[in-house]
Image 1 (cartoon, one colour):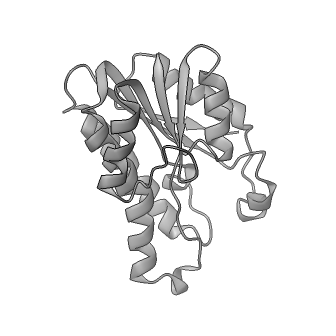
Image 2 (cartoon, rainbow, N blue to C red; image 1 turned 120 degrees about the horizontal axis):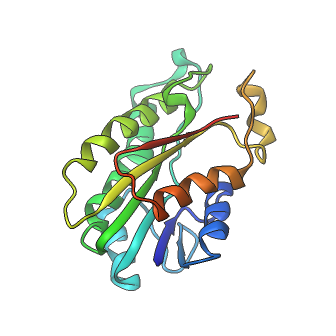
Amino acid sequence: MKILIVGSSGTVGKAVSSRLGLDHTVLEASRRTYPSVDLTSDDSVRELFEVIGQVDAIVACTGTVPFKPLRDLAGSDYQDAFNDKVLGQIRLVNIGRDYLNDGGSFTLTTGILAREPILTGAAASMANGALESWVPAAATELDRGHRINAVSATVLAEAPGYHAFFPGFVPVPAARVAAAYAKSVEGTHTGKVYGVEG
């Protein structure tokens, strides 16, 4: 398979690229690669696909959200979280489906905060929850045999700087998270949200 991984420069993206690259051709894209991509821009996403052409799977390991106490979160913070993590990934699907071969798959990224809140995580919970509601709905309407799933992991073992913000959560290694992406890409499910927890 020819697989596009957007957000390949992050910890999860690198692990997913490594895992899927064992058996498939992986194309990596981020704001810092060539071709580069900015998921907040329709034109940027289209330009990416015009360069790389048709693919068999599209994986998004992306999404930036602000972490602030609830009282400090402004409307613009929620809008930024929604534009980047939610609409960015939805944009990748909406435009990418024209470049996805028949029977291909999308795999998006959410997170455990959709189900288990933490202090300062309200914007992240909103964004993750929105995606986890959208994925099964989108799965019912995709055509040409396209599938769509999401991976929703807890805090990473390789990100110790975040561990204090997730008290009582058991971190998981990025390689284990990458296995969930492989399950989505190489499997048969659609409309699933794969939770990865310790």
